[in-house]
Image (tube, rainbow, N blue to C red):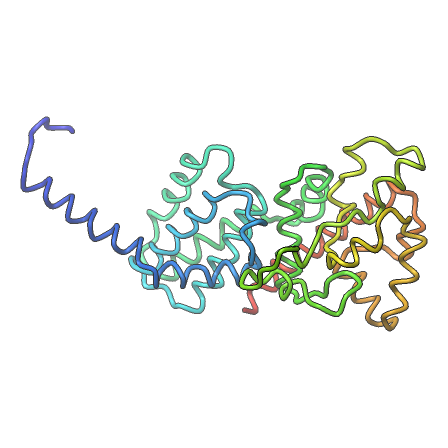
Length: 291
């Protein structure tokens, strides 16, 4: 481009590099090894990944670390799992993904060893997921009724990482989200903890309030049908009789439910649950290190 000179030899060299790189990228062994990092990050189902670009760019970083830096297999899976969790949670590649990825690649120019590479990735993660992010920014971002919210998806991923039970069930979230299990009816459904018609009966008709992320929980579909439009103060005591006090306490923790939540004023409940959801997401992210 600079000299305006054409070289058949140089062109063939460039195409040879392209052929070799393409084969490496499309190698199914590489692809499936990378997918283990996504599973370690808790993202077991594609329905909870809002950006396909986050997958592709995380895969690119995984390939660079594996081929160019020879990063240790175990440490690298943890690092890429944490990177993907951060990228998916914050929507890192949703606005201007190409520009964002160029900036990320530019950071790697100073890397010469596997330790350098991991240090740069971890440094960026820590720069994004600060204490203020967990305690202020994330709870505020959860104040939304958007159907595909990155915070809500990260919360479900955290439940998988933490091996949490489904609300009012003995089954684990990760088990019922297993993509190898298919049925006509989804094993898990999003349920309004305060049902829509109940809220409308108490004069809360704003859709943005009814469909708040903090008003949703994952239930087995059969439980979702049984609860229907009943107020929580009616169905919760009935369901809690299935469990010991210790089981209920654990369930409340994982599902970010304040004590006696079903008797709280609705908007007070939403605020308290957003803060607890952010805490569970942080717990899940921190658990990734443990493998």
